[in-house]
Image 1 (cartoon, one colour):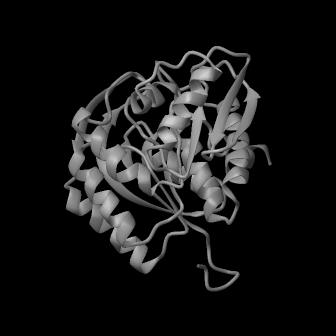
Image 2: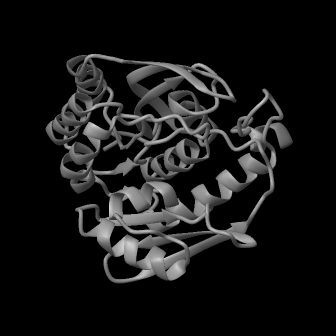
Length: 270
């Protein structure tokens, strides 16, 4: 709880570092800053990557990841947080313990498993821990279609499959499931927010661009930022969806693969 009107909304990203600057904590902190939120980070791992490939991953010690979370939570405070790349089982367990210990309730879980380049970012042995420890702590989990297929064990090819997978994933413990439908063939990019009873649909024009590196990180970070600012979840998703769409529309044509989004598109238009 902020003590006065001059204090800043505070958001924490618990994720990996992207040396290319397009995803991970770099994308998260850019998003927080663009949306007027004070950003903090607990780095879980360091990657060597660019727009083409992830060439190396070094996971940090799990207790050190937890120490980062504890230090910022007990001093600065956390209005909302998001998780991204958690890498291995030990880190997943340590993050879950720290989230519980510091009573972080507005938690956005981006179940990062595979990079845009196709490289694995979550060891298979960590998936069970993610489901068992992290999902029950989530206010909302934000899987894309491939991630939702892993979490639900169900093939997803149409909106009916999306609804069934959302019900399965909701049964794993999160209060809300945001199914990102960008991988499904359609004229629009349609996402589905399921609360266990009702589904709210968010639609935006599909932007044909190769510069989409960091979309999942940016979307979940924007949701966390709006939650930190005091928005209800459905409003946070709505605002985050609009922000993401324009960040893709104004993306940078950098590198030989998937270029990054433009997180500061609004400021650059002023």
